Amino acid sequence: MNSLEYQMVDIARELKEKHAAISVKAEFEAEGTRLEELLRLKEICMVAGVGLTLKIGGCESIRDMFEARTVGVNCLVAPMVESPYALRKYLQAVNKVFTSQERQNIEILCNIETVTASNNLEEMLEISENSTLQGIVIERVDLCFSLRLDDQSINNKEINQLVLEIIKKAKKRKLLCVVGGGISAHSLPFFPEYPK
Image 1 (spheres, rainbow, N blue to C red):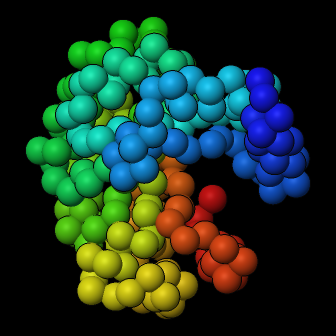
Image 2: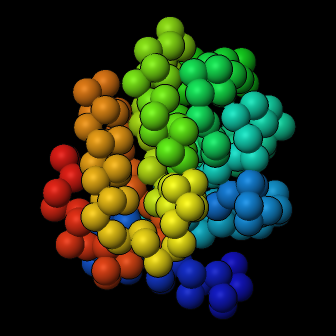
């Protein structure tokens, strides 16, 4: 590792120890992480003792899933899953790429990042393939944009209420819930309202 990568290890360790961080996220989707970058990040995460989460390029990005398997990510997230059909396609692809044994060692999550996904969530969670899904990631920035709000609205009561409703629906199904997108010190007052 080079000196910059050792600094990244120190930062990841500090985030883990002082702020309960459990994983570092990379994405093929919007950030366009290259495979060699993902491999370096995996080593950094392993040395720091944190997991590696990868957001793939779409609900049926088979090649991204193969690369996630090759690298050994701890968590896989699909973006823009807004309907039962999209969730079904994602989970079928996961079941095709990863063996049942491999799926025991990777968390399978999907992003809920639009008002459309929020409105369809209960129907989405009723699909038969749902036993593969372990949780959701609520992405607040895109959620704001889907409501035609700007990113300064992330911490307003309307968004917080919507996030709370999404969490309650997911928790009924015993799913892990991750809240992301624009997390800052200004977000902290809302977190105690979220169910554990």
